[in-house]
Image (cartoon, rainbow, N blue to C red):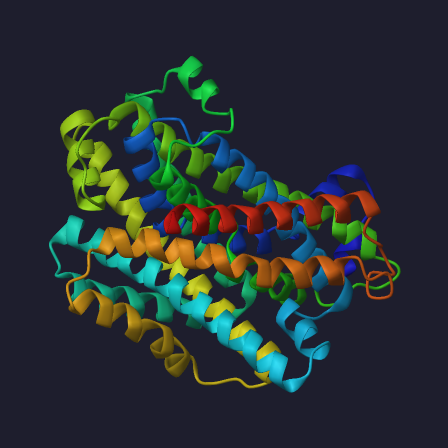
Length: 408
C-alpha cells in the first residue's frame, strides 16, 4: 500500500479515489433486470406508493455492503469462506445449496433481462437472446485475467450506461414532488403490493452481492495491517456510499418514471413498458430504456458469475472452470424461457426467491462483524451492530408477512 504514504491533502484525495471501485461492482447487482421489472411494475400499478420501500432498502443495503466490505478487508477472507470455517461439513453443504439456489435465481433474472433487451432492440428470439447474453457476460468475466481494476472499469462503464438510460425519461416526464413525497410514508395496499414490496427488497438487498463484496475488497486490497486498516476503511466507506447513491438513484428514478408516465396503463411485462415509454415519451426514451436494460443484464450476470465462484470456493474449497460454472446457472434460465413462461413474471418471482435468501447472508455477516477478535484492527461499534440486527429482523419480518398474505 505504497499509495497510502504520499503526503498532503491532494495526494490523500487521489489515493482514496484510486481505492474506489469494488463497491461499484457490487452495486451493479442492485440495478439488475429484476429491479427494472419490480420497480416499473410498482410505479405503473401503485404510482409512488412503494417509494418508501426503495429508500429504506437502499439505506439497508448501504449498511450491509459496508459491513461485508469491512469483513473482507479486516480478515482477508470472503464471507462464504468465513462461514465455511465456522460450520461443520453438513451445515456447510446445506448452506452452499441455498446459496447456489440464490445464484440460480440471480442468473435467471439477469439473463432473462438481457434476452428481453435484445428482443426489444434487434428482435432476437428470447432463447437466442439468452444464449447471447450468457456468452457475452462470460466473456466479460475473462477480463479479470487482465486484473481486477480492468474488470471494475468495464463494469463501471456499463453501470454508467444503466444510469443514463434509465433516468433519461425523467427529463421528459418529471414526477409530481408532492405525490412522490407522500410515497415516503410506509404503507401497503393488499397482497399484490406486499408481493411487490418483498420483490423490491430482494432486488435491492441482494444476497449474492453481500457474499461478493467481501471478496472484491479482499482481491483488491488484500488484508488490513495495523498501519493502514482504518485509512483504507475510510476509503471503503466512501466507495460504498457513492456506489449506493448511484444504485439508489437509478432504482428510485425507475419507479418515479413509471409512476409519472405509466401509472394507470394496462401493462403486461417489460415489452409493454418499452412500448408505452415510446408512445408516451418518444422513441429516444424507449431506446435508452432498452439499452440500459441490456447493459444491466450483461453487467449483473457477469457480477453474478463472479459471486457464484466466490461462494463455491469459500464453502466447498473448489474452483471449477468458468464455462462450467456459468452453464450451471444459465441452463435453468434457458429451460424456463424455452417452455414459454412469461419473462417479466420470471423476473419478479426470482426477486422474491432472492429475498428469502437474504437472512442466510445477513445473519452470519452481522455475527462475524461483531466478532471483536476478527475485527480487532477496527472493531464494529455496538450501535452499528444493533442497527444491523434491526435490518435483518425487518427483512425476515417482511418475508413472514408475505407468506401470511399469500396463504390468507
